[in-house]
Length: 376
Image (tube, rainbow, N blue to C red; front, side, top):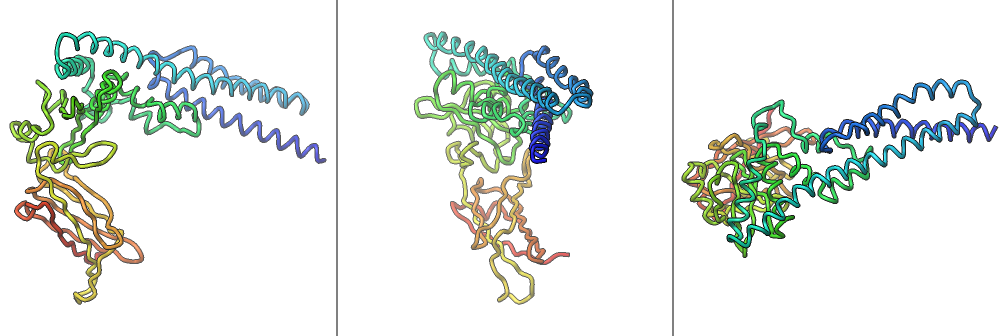
């Protein structure tokens, strides 16, 4: 009786692991066309063959004794395991191989041209060449497929842990963005930033706008940051970061900017780009009665800051108030903002909205109070 119980447990474990591996293989098949160049059709056929073999295996199990069944299940389990491991390796290697082709091309080009011209001109030439190969037709197209975004949203590290390690710990997603040569300004900025850093060894970064739906790459040459926004704001030449405000002003985009954020650190770099920032502190005050003595700063209030003057990006900052009911953000000074704060907890539902005029924000520091009133 005890042996039967052990056999039943082992049988259940083998079946469970097989189901896991089958789900993992389906997941890997769905990722193949986004992670490989070109798609390894033989790998797809092998996966389909493994899955199709489930049907005859299930028939055999009904006609053999338990020991034979164990051997069949164990063998099938080993086949699935090997395919699971090999397919993850092939997907990672195919992406790595394709990326190394791109890197080798631009690495050789950089070191060849650097002898003929200065570093900045060489880098700009590489950015321009990569831009010609980069497909930005996806912008504004809701049906466009951008590989890195599909992988980021759909990838399940539980079903493919080794591939997950490659994508996250070995810059696999960044390499995918470089290789795919397709996407919006964010993809172009990520690709150029990663590729230049890998080929030149110079510091690079990605800057995101708040107030404008845009992002761009930068590179540091001999202590100076240069804007390399070939897709939009600086298409003709690179601009030194501290001259960027003037460059935006010629395009009348300076008024739409609310903040410039360094990706990764989330640090505001407004001042580095010629803008005058202000440290704005919002105090959320719960005002549920007409008695002002009952007013109290409220922690955990959700704060959203909007810019009426923007370029497809009205929400420019958000966060939650601390234990003192405060939230501090860095924004561009002398600009109008709408601040909304709300809270829904412990039976309290309150909201507050204020308009802060540009004339009030000449800072460097400013504190404003938002009174939250009950709402039904």
